[in-house]
Length: 311
Image (cartoon, rainbow, N blue to C red; front, top):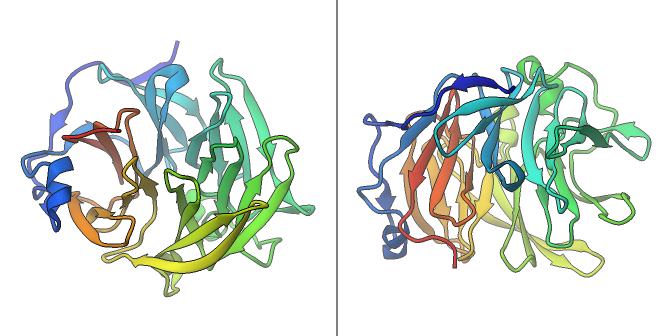
């Protein structure tokens, strides 16, 4: 039996936060001014990496510092999906329905299958251990793309202090047929990543500011034949804070975390609006129909209902 940490029941409204703020009329058509945050769970330590897991019909996310992967069900029940984790952070769903984990502590990618079995996916590049895989997405062709910053090597609450074996911090791609790992791009501290709906643009956040650098940037890359990444360019500079996690929706909008909450941009880079959060927002994801946005923020898992969904 799963370890239940919240019994079924309605969410708690969040009364002490500003209403969503539209900077463009299109935003108000999707996120109503009267929409309010709901608290689905508030007993985590540091929440990150939310993703909807269809195989188990639940929203899963990481309590990185609490070393758990938690799952929220639509009846409000929250259970422990994976306990005593090696500081798991970001997640993706692979083409076989498995839950892919980024493990800071063991410096690798792993997989939990729907039946609970655990597998290692990859842990080295050219014979050297990764830094601390942080976030991961599954492309339409089944390839796993992931970022490998240094956070788990320098933050003892999120990993294990160690000297890096690699002299770069990069974006990687795992070939879905051969398992080959390819180094696609280098950044200062690559963090969140997301594909445009067409699959021809990849957005990657660079968040070196949180480790004393200058970057609080979302970069865009063209995905070309090979596949390869080309035409690196600054898509947006995010204030306040850093663009930790990033997602795209079916419209091609880019939704990013920040210190102020969830900031939303059009595909052309125009600021559309803001969903304020009481604490720093770390990451976010959508329900399958895009009618609800889930938000991780320190000890909380929040949600806000959207007016229009996918399509």
